[in-house]
Image 1 (tube, rainbow, N blue to C red):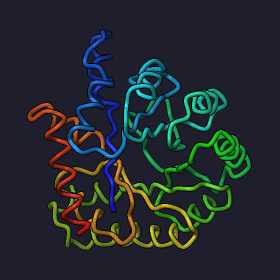
Image 2: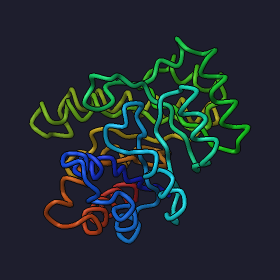
Image 3: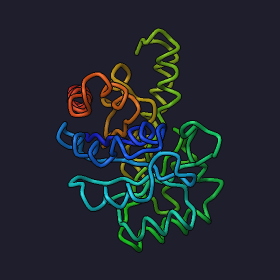
Image 4: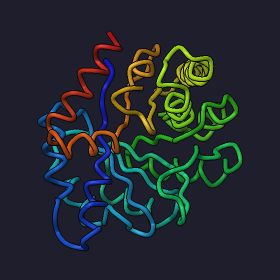
Length: 248
């Protein structure tokens, strides 16, 4: 059954805008859980621009659903993950000047170092995911380094959807969706879990949720944006209904 992981980074972004103590990402995680979230995702960046170490520690202690820790494959971050033991650690590329993650991880070009990171996480009992573009070469490399999960980058699909009249049947959108489908099939054929995420929202999510075999969608910005108007619990509930309808 398809699941929804809610990324709460931008609750912390609001907090950091005033450099204060509210809103609390842990409170947001509880509200997301009550709205039907199956997991919570946070990205602990090296520059700590939003989520902080204390947030992750408290989330590990206080949440009752799966915790997915997004992170760069650095010794510091791997050490933090091994201490806190989230249910999943997702390795992502990270740039200091980017607003958000701009593309998939180049697993094929970093096999040796990423294989070491995956092994260390696996030895600590943590499932490892890699965030990759819809590229067969990257899927093959992910399997080779021992990743258990591949999250396929849906950003190009979302950009095409927004630019081409919000029409799921436009040629550009269909082409991008076909790439995600093919990558998902390759992921499953290699024995890994097929997840997807990035820039998904209430208007473009259903075609991705309807893809064969997709297990989890990770969505953050759209849900936090909707929560400004309806609250996190209701925003999560609406998204969960959309993805379950499409998957059915």
